[in-house]
Amino acid sequence: MIENKLFHKQPERAVLVGLIKPGETKEQALEYLNELAFLVETAGGEPVHYFYQRTEKPHPKTFVGKGKLEEIKEFIRNNKIDTVVFDDELTPSQQFQLEKELGVKILDRTTLILDIFAQRAQTAHAKTQVELAQYEYLLPRLKGMWTHLERQRGGIGMRGPGEREIETDRRIVQKRISDLKKKLAKIDKQKKTQRSNRGKLVRVALVGYTNAGKSTLMNVLAKANVFAENKLFATLDTKVDKIQVGNISFLISDTVGFIRKLPTQLVESFKSTLDEIREADVLLHVVDVSHPDFRDHIKTVKETLLEIGAGDKPVITVLNKTDVLDEEQKRKIINEFSADNRNFVMISAITKEGLDELKRKLYREVRKIHVKRYPVNDFLYPDIENLI
Ligand SMILES: Nc1nc2c(ncn2[C@@H]2O[C@H](COP(=O)(O)OP(=O)(O)OP(=O)(O)O)[C@@H](O)[C@H]2O)c(=O)[nH]1
Ligand SMILES: [Mg+2]
Image (cartoon, rainbow, N blue to C red; front, side, top):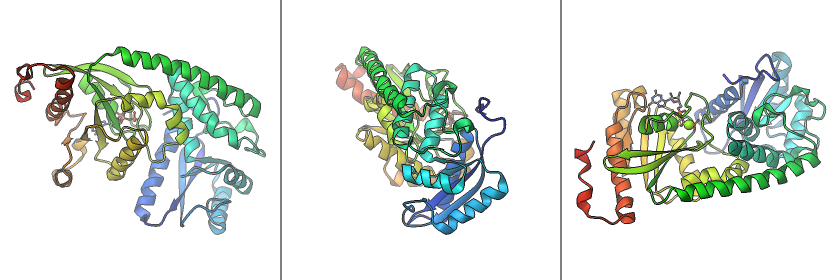
């Protein structure tokens, strides 16, 4: 449980609002709201109720239509609600209008994710990246923000890194943005030098949806000690370790997870963190196959990889958390992925089932790159079956 002690004794009670877009089923929309609820909990809030509306696109002024807005208003009146969270990024004017109509704090998906990142950030690098993303998002929204509510409410959406309340004075924010950019440019340069100092070693990056089990797998593979927990965005900082499989040493990195509608401000300011993925030779795409929406997660990760310019790398799909599945479910998934002709392996990072097979696959991929980079006689690479 993330502490919210600075601002609230009780968790903020939140109502969640999403849209069912054309082509989406109600189940899908509910799954999306479940994810939003998980985000709210991770931020220290308490999801109380879901509202959703079938519509082609958000209402330009109030996100949902008039009738739905009345329903939400009524619910807020009767249930001591502090906050309403919308599952998409709101425009500054929607935010302003909703604030006026509903009289409670209005948050959108982006603010929520930025807030979680702010609480999670540990190093100066992560803190700088998050703070910049927060202010870039905030700048066009400062006018009229929470005008009639005053800022004493604080809490979710108002916290910067290190439990500092974020600044809302426009001039100070502008100055802060330019300072943060300068600071980040400096850190990015250092990071680049660090990466280039790692030489020609093959680099493998763990990628995947948030909470898929990347850090848990990193801990198992590299005997590292990376923080892992059942909350979203447990990892923000990149951790790199050297490991040996068979007779080859290579680098493995664990980094920030992806999510649907990852705020663009974050993608931009996390550029150097994401460089770790961009510059990797092989990707291990970790998937939580026990999650009902895992196919959607795979799609999101692929799209994000394309977006950051890492869409063309060799990928091993690591279907994780098989310990939660029964035999029938496993068989179905194996058939599905075999038909797809994908390079995949089923594992459990907890019970370690499938780990040897993962190592063999990893060895083969790394070896392909290794022989190109260090041309030597093939006999130096004995058959992996004898090694693991
Ligand atoms: N049952 C089961 N749980 C797992 C397995 N692997 C990881 N978990 C759990 O899944 C949760 C998330 O694991 P993490 O390793 O933190 O996931 P992550 O992908 O690093 O998440 P972020 O850093 O938030 O992106 C934790 O509670 C883990 O204990 C597994 O094989 N089986
Ligand atoms: Mg992690």
